[in-house]
Image (cartoon, rainbow, N blue to C red):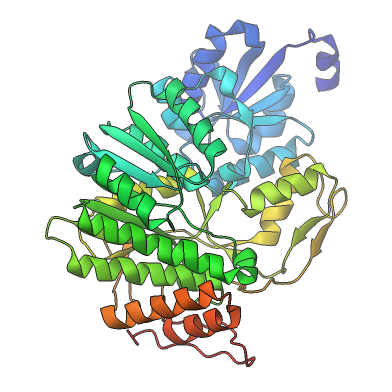
Length: 499
């Protein structure tokens, strides 16, 4: 019956089954009516809330629940499913997508933009998109204390290092929502900063910005920037983050991550910056890599600076795991491998990672920056870890292929410095809750300024001499919890509270 009806349908017409009878579903149905040129006709709604069954949304009947999808699709001659549940957790979207595949194999499905975009008017029916891996792994929207964030951003000069990167550029977008007096875009890559400028011109024309091309390793350049632009708030997102590349180039991890970060921290202290927020990583915990150890050292630099800061200055670090879609993350790599016909390569069948979406991570960074307790390391609630091989296979399915049939998945082995799993806390840190349900704070160790200075001086000398074995030995012997293989082939874990 469905096949006969489809054969009679006018070319370009689409009979849409809307999943979700809530606010998003209502908005999207109204948008379809307002834009008939899209040739999308809402014919039925499904919702698992039984109280809605038998009712209608703008005249479209709520015909049942997810379990009724096959019969409803047949009855209403559906050609496409539209998932209108942007506020639902990823596991709910995953269940809906699985139901579509099982009950209506081959039926196309798409999703609506985020609720914030819909309500703000920045997205409409023409922004309907294919279901993304973010939808399946995402969590409920972050609840923000806007007043607290606004209290330290509104009307202030805000500097973002690494502004052209995935995290840095999203920080800029989120910060613009809180009406800073000026945004200082500091980055090393001119092309990414240029692209961000064009986006700000288009999306945030009322926001004043200033672009600065430079490297945080260049202390004299930074001194000039702080002295002339006088930022009030600094978000530090610039870093070398690729674990295998930093294993091959450990001196660059020292120059950029350690020395560059210390340059920023010292200048923030000297020029009276009110808030300094350092972006850290789960790889800094019990690090087995040069990159992770360098980022752990930066956490200590920030903590030691907090002890010297004025009472009205706040120096904190925010630690979280992998971010979906960020540069160099697995998602873009997997996509390119799928486009090439495979194989999709995974390091190990048991490797797991924590994931967040870029907007979720950056919103929580802004919230953590407003907690107001200097010297603390905040940890973002990353939810449950995800097996990378499951992520790869789901992405293959979303691309319209069958994993291990159309696109093979192969295992290549862990790369130098990588772990099977990452940690967000050491056993000694014993995180405690904050006022925000998704932000925790680690119980920090005491930092010896003398030992910290001595370690960084030794690392600098080793990096200038390109003595990579010496760099690893210094990190292994001095960074809390570090377990990096040293030149003699041994590895020992530095006690957590040695500082």
